[in-house]
Image (cartoon, rainbow, N blue to C red):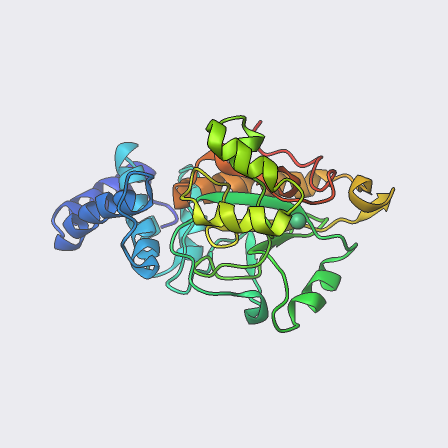
Length: 293
Ligand SMILES: [Zn+2]
């Protein structure tokens, strides 16, 4: 596409798309997708289909900005990153393959099947963590063990982003859930009474929370994407230990990734949490991470 004006390129692409039956199909796709992921949707679609429809949204996004062209056609997504940059088209969405893997220049796909659990039908939130180790490799080593805990992404101190689990699978990164209505002071009197009576029984309370429908509960292992930032506790003990600060490179990558995931998967930016916000964890975990500037 080198040497062509963006405008000419778009015009031709627009003509091509307008005449193609596939494009009409894709326009339909977006509505299906929104119905499937929005809180009001019936949520009955299969995840595989949903992810394919993420790509359809791309058409609409560019459509709205009058920026349709074949740059985000499905043949060569890496080339399309380049193309979008050449033509000054912003990064709005991530490409996600049928396997649930992100295809973007900034993301290195390095999947560890041992941390992948059952299918994740819907993504309702994003949870930010710190690994507790000082290198990416120490986390990777632990991800090799069967049944290991892990998250979908890991950001090294240098800011390099790895995808370590498919977005179509759940991973064990949240653990026991806190009561959302207690935390937000939104419980009915009866619910508060029950939750209060379980206040020291984390397991029981968490089981009870899991039975609730989102957004009455926090996002869990079954419906959230986890992002690990490499970093360990440097002082203190137990739940008062202090984690090392997130590096500026890590934070820049985190901001980018959170925004892209939220836009691509239709997850609200209000549903992005630090791990200790929704589970019983070291209070300083990911405290220095910022994503909503
Ligand atoms: Zn964590």
